[in-house]
Structure formats: C-alpha cells, structure tokens
Length: 139
Image (cartoon, rainbow, N blue to C red; front, side, top):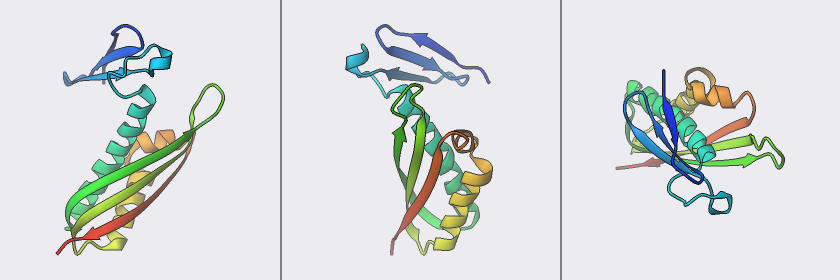
C-alpha cells in the first residue's frame, strides 16, 4: 500500500490514496487552518468507524439479516498533554432493518472489534474502545 500527502499551505493537506482518491484535511483556525476539511485525528476516528461498520454490515448480511441502514456515532477523549493520543473511544451503532436479531448484531460488532478490524485493533493497543448498539425495527 502506498499513499501520498501534499501540504496545501497553512495547516491544510491533500491526501492521495493508492486508488487515486483525494481527501482534504485541515487544522483548526487557531492553528493556521482554514476549516477546509476534517482534522487528521477526526479522519483517524472516521477510518476506524468505517472499518468496523464495513465488517458489521458484511457479517449481518452474511447472517441473512435484512438491514437497511447502519449509522455509527463516535465519541472519543484525548490525553491532555502531548502526545494527545486517544484515551478512550466509544462507538454507538444504530442498525435499522426488518426483524434484526440482537444476538446477531452483538456478534457482528464483537467479531469486528476482536478479529477483523485492523484499525480498531491497532487503536485499541493505546485507547480503551467500547461499543454498544440499538436496533430500529422496520415493518
């Protein structure tokens, strides 16, 4: 895997993925940023959540669950001093669908967190990561 990052002035950066996709990241205005995109640490959380959610959706689909949506709210705290690493991260999954079984949602989240999501397992070496979920049953 090879990616590139180019400084775009101030506290802004343009990332280029190996697949040719671009993403803009920027720092806060008080740090010279212009609010052109998410902060790099926000990108880290979003990436981890995307990795977990990909797994959860895939596992639920393979379990023949009729899911129609999966939304994740991520909250995190960082250390006060430098390096300001994440100390704890919480993912709250909101799974929508028809006749979705609680045991299958729990199993999918656990498998992702403990076995499949490299980003979550890597961040979990430094931060306490917790999960919970709710299910919105549709008719």
